[in-house]
Image 1 (tube, helix red, strand yellow):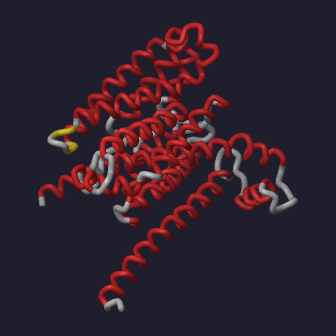
Image 2: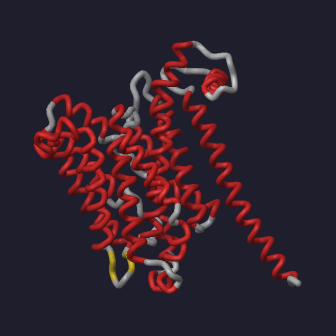
Image 3: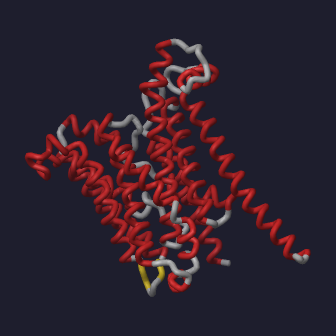
Length: 361
């Protein structure tokens, strides 16, 4: 027979799990709502009812349709970029959550510590000098060399940060930030060099690409998006090992976790996701920082729930930011990286001030 205390503990644990599950369900519903609203938002406004009717028609729930012109806008322009926003936002949010657990630091983020900038350096180098790097193979594999170069830049930066910021078996937050500043500076200097070398056509695309864009590059985006989906699926499986890793490396080893193997796999998968995201959309900052912090307010620190919730929250943030970017400076379009920077910059500053206050206490 269970004691009253055991029953109360069981009910409390069930309530916590139930709350986390409902949080995931609520986030999914918010993502659906934001997606539907974003489909109707833009230079050519489409009523919410028409969007719902069109979606119902496409999935076979309704025989009636909407105006053909509006239908083409939804199918060929907005739906592809919103799907890119969901995949890229989900990948960046998830990558941020994994990096924060891997570094055991709440301010770890692919953009802040230089991973995104390094991926951008690799991609820009391939865009501007790919014909030199690949030689006669460029016409065949040139377009697909950009994701590979972005991935290589992200992997190298992540490895450097991890090695250089370690001190007595722990990651020093201050050193990590300083290393990130140095890597960002070097990577952006390299981007500047290649931007200076670019011709007029390359320069126009690079300028917009460096500030983030979801317009896409057509079929050449497909391999990078597939890589992102595979990387996201793998990172989702790391919730339980990362929970044990947060206890400390020695404790995790005693509990059966292959710590070095976990760090390598998580690092490579995170770099893969970030590199592919940068190759498709350019530099989009702060999603990986903000999303995990928001979801931890609801789900707590358990990575089994934090990881999927961060992916969904990242998708919501980027989909909403894309809708804002399309209408805030009509008839032009604001680069989405500027929108996320406007939101994420003050959030990051507030996070640092809170950490400063906590250390005083």
